[in-house]
Amino acid sequence: MTQLAVSRRTQSLVVTPAVVAHRGASGYRPEHTLEGYRMAIRMGADDIELDLVPTKDGVLVARHESEISSTTDVADHPEFADRETTRTIDGLTTTGWFVEDFTLAELKMLTARERLAGLRPESAAYDGACGIPSFNEVLAMVGAESVLGGRSIGVMAELKHAAYFDSIGLPLDEMLLFDLGRHDLDHPRSRVTVMSFEPTILRRLAHRTRVAIVQLLEAADQRPADLVAADDPRTYADLCTREGLAWVDEYADGIGAHKSLVLPRDDRGAISAPSTLVRDAHRMWLTVHVWTLRRENRFLPINLRGEGLAGAAGDLAAEAQAFLDAGVDGLITDHPDIVLDVLRDADVLRTGRAGSQTV
Image 1 (tube, rainbow, N blue to C red):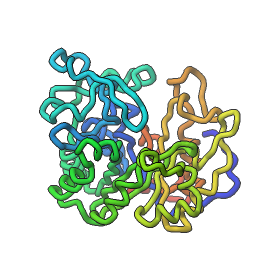
Image 2: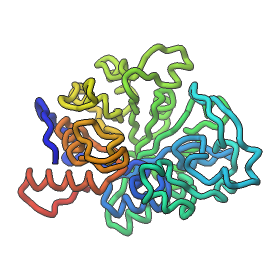
Image 3: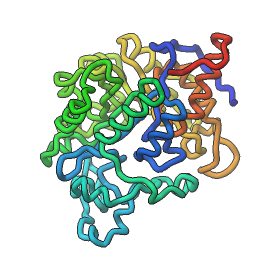
Image 4: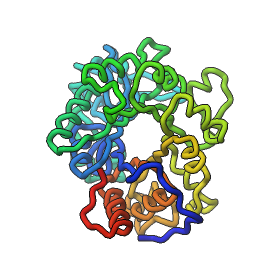
């Protein structure tokens, strides 16, 4: 494993940082599928992370974005050809097919596809084998897997484009609370965490739910879509200041930070010393998860890339260790098996005991 220079190790707030499967084991199976979630759980992931968007009939489903042409076979269905449209969401104009124009029953006619097929041909081999799950189905599956595996598995649910969906009469918080209620999961011990890049919906939910809340933070120069709509000039960098973190602490239990906010890259694209974000957040007892750790060269800093093209494997283990040294409380990754091995090795070194558990 590549050795990185870290100025000083920062202590995590938790005994063992969590390994969170980003959209399932999405380095190996198409993202946001029950099969991908199950694979991650059986690898040993502590939590699964999923993105939630609403159908036309008000049901939350797991998709990366509202537009679904890159993650489903919708373009191959002539009966839905007339649904193709151009829409502007959060300032980005996209042409395609959008979840909010389909009922759940119609979405069940589609199958999932690998979004990064050029980088992940092995995962793309499963195109067409998996359906589009609702949040209700994911919660039921996680409950069953928790019983089967004899351990509690967490769910980190990200609400996508909340202000936009509010504007078209599809409030995500209402649907979320309905699904949590039907599974008796709206309580602090449920292992459910709700996340969003938009503070407005999280502040609203802080008064309505007892589950954990995490404010997601994009790259420093970007702005939350809801704050843009409200003419609030703050960027994500502003939310990372001590004043910004104090504001986040009013409604959230933690932050989910873009990798660059914790381990900035230099002009060459290499990482070295961490920022003060983890330490500053921990002073307010805010946990810190970091996203997204992937093994392909395309996603790694230049000093951790391996030989080969963009899809070749680099040193994800070294990147994971660098974030652990920076004191993060959770690592959100497409490759939970690799990150879990890093946690296990670190535990053996710390305790001298082989075979320790990460959950």
